[in-house]
Length: 209
Image (cartoon, rainbow, N blue to C red):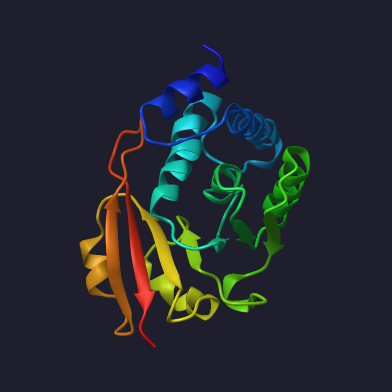
């Protein structure tokens, strides 16, 4: 089975609406990631079929819970979940932030090859980065703890509109109990990723002041 057939099958097990052109772009992205990974070691996932599940589907399934138009993907690595989400939602804008030069080099190449006009790669440490305006959402699956995420990214969103979207495995009850007083859990979504073994959750957090 080709990668395109594999991805089409995985998507058919969800409620996602993905066009053939979007599927083609997602496959191109996986092929680029696989090619660059051999030299630059961008992800520990080596097999393109595994990338479809662990990277592409895992990222796409987050889209259902997003609210807003302008997002920043902090610690994006090779563009996850930002690039798959940018392909799925061309009307939304994504800043992809990472402090490692080789990842940003890859992202620039991927954005150029895929002709993505709604993605901006930025090489910076999150605590040093100031957006031109506050974001509707901060996305991340890179942070070790919710506390780290909210403390380092608070300056990126407003109290009114802004939300943190934290991608986690098992429901992190102990991390939630240790959140700062000005951060509250607004919502929690259990995400079912076709083909993925293990739990996935997206936690939606809000800043009070």
